[in-house]
Image (cartoon, rainbow, N blue to C red):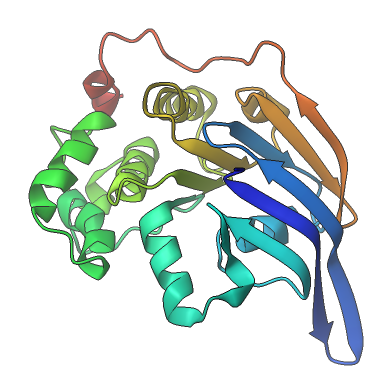
Length: 244
């Protein structure tokens, strides 16, 4: 069974008297354990596709199944449970609570899921992304790369099957972006987490094993990457990244 299955998905937005077709009959299958990049120019429909994949929006027509569950049959509360338990989100601007330290930020998704031993799990998640020494720092005390690692730890909090990352390196310099991609690669390789990332940068997409090109609301090309690029995987330990 495929982890993700879209069949003839369309999405239409109404803007005043104008209807805008963001997606036009997209069919897509993603298997568990894949690392996939979605690329496309502004207005191509890639963000709409990501929102539907992340259960943040519903298609106007067509069907979407995640882990064998028909998303179209779910109510708002059931969709929230899917997002909380199966999907971790990472955004370009980190989306951290500014007055709250790293541990509390990582704890947040577990509060909604009534998870026990939240602090221990938050500490473990932070350590796994090289933030073990800065878990009590607030976002304004952290660099952009450090904040993004906290965001990745937060995405890991509920042990999701999927991480969806929207331009996760867009606000970072080249080296820090490579460090972040190294973390995604390791999570995919060692934990088998399915990684789906939206990016407009070919050098970031090259870290994936599959690249899906979206243009004018349709998939124009879906290609396997024979030899993915690799991020900074040979650093002695991820904890050293926290000092970068």
